[in-house]
Image 1: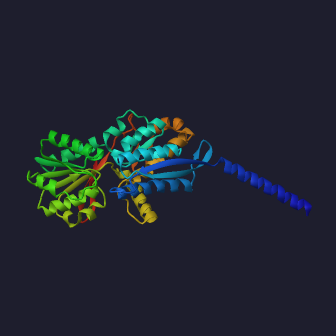
Image 2: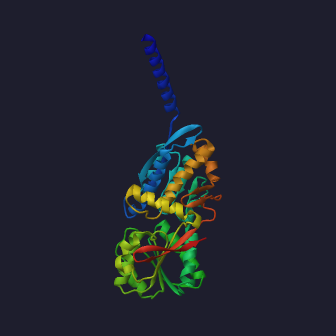
Image 3: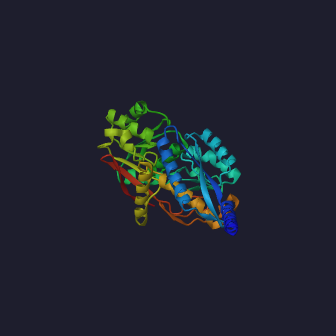
Length: 381
């Protein structure tokens, strides 16, 4: 009996020691996420947060091995409310928290000032949605994006207005944010180069709800197309108020209005009006099944449909971890070089970065709206 107890005791000690070794080998890697979880763009910010959390959950269900050790990913989530000043405060908190990489921010106006904080700390940042070209033109080797930029979006939309809609006159409104101004200016360049004339240039802000004054000014110029540089929270009410004023102009905007929620924001006034928008990404045929599966899993997990950029946030998390795995380290100083050489096939397609951190061969998708739903007009390059 004593011999049996001794064997059991030794066995228990070995098991305990083995568990201790296994526990010691487990490592937690903290990643940061920042976006507008409150404010006018909260629906969009929460969408990308869910995409990022879904990626973390998928990774932790089958822990990745980095440098020979199993890793658990922890996500540190911060709300920047889409505000540039708050974004820099959030960025500093994430740096102080010791994150090894950041997904976000959402709005270009928040992403650009925050990127300097991450650059100074040498922490990679992947924005899943910021389109202003300035973001990757600052000379920071830590900035990356997963979508086409405003130059590409505005160029395609400007040409479409003139070549497909035969627009000869356009009115342009923007919300004075880095995003809104950027895409509006790119649209103006493209549309005027294609032969259109800008007959009205108006400005609002990203918290406005009443556009009757500027729309009355616009109506007086009788434009063929009204282009809005801003988000769906203003784009929807703007379409409603165009209807109230009896305006018949076609309506156009970038990815900020190109959401599944625009029909509910615009209401019945969306019916019968030609509306075109562009999403700063595009799923080529070979990735459609994977995207459909992602959307299904997302709906099952959260009880809500993807709004727009959740799949991009999902891939951003995966791309950061993929670079760490290839580098054998979660140390930004070691894995950044591998991040620059990314060749990753994910939900949104194949991701490869150019020397600035922009996508090589970026795509975008044009959409219109029919019967209260977004309808794709095809992927553009």
